[in-house]
Length: 309
Image (cartoon, rainbow, N blue to C red; front, side, top):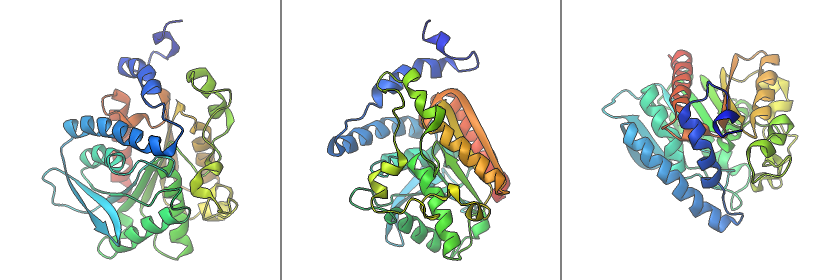
């Protein structure tokens, strides 16, 4: 079977051609001291493409003592609504270029201000350091912006962090954002068919090989049964979540987890919608050249525009 025949006919030619390169280019070193510069360079290459395609103005600064990147569509003066972007990277990398990569296309397509949070990373800083940083930025933001006009979104680890931030806001009796985006990650173990299927798609993976969210250094010492840590098993907490958009792909090791989270949110009565891309992979929309990435940005924009007004 040819490489092209391993995909459905609806998968773009660009994605078919890109998948093998993605597997090769994303094979990170096991040592953290090497993985961090590896992903910094990887994200920088993708960010260069994003900035060439999408016109935005970016300002680096601090909010409540936390480093952030303020990204706005070029020429925009309207700062409401606002999106908080929480980058991925296993809670261990993804800062800088990675945070901007997840913010630039969304700011351009939504025509909204996006504040990308460079939260503290593990293993130097474990739970709840990242949550503390996000909540500090959010507290400062709601001093001038109506919480109903704020959205929070994240991919991979950032998706998990998004749910932790909402849980923390509920715990602290703070107003929750108007909507959230949970992409390619969820506060659920990365298990199930999606994790098992990695051996079919990824020659680097042994059968069942996938990151284990509960084993990430960020969670060292954390009580995983605490609803503030992993909320999916706590319907009383989920029932208070804002409208949620979930996105994953069939070749994403987190797809089963995201699907389960969607069902848990629906069971809790939350306005939740789930989009699954066939033939695509983990965090596929980081590559702005894919037609499916453009489609992803449009879905995200439509959701936040409708929810935040």
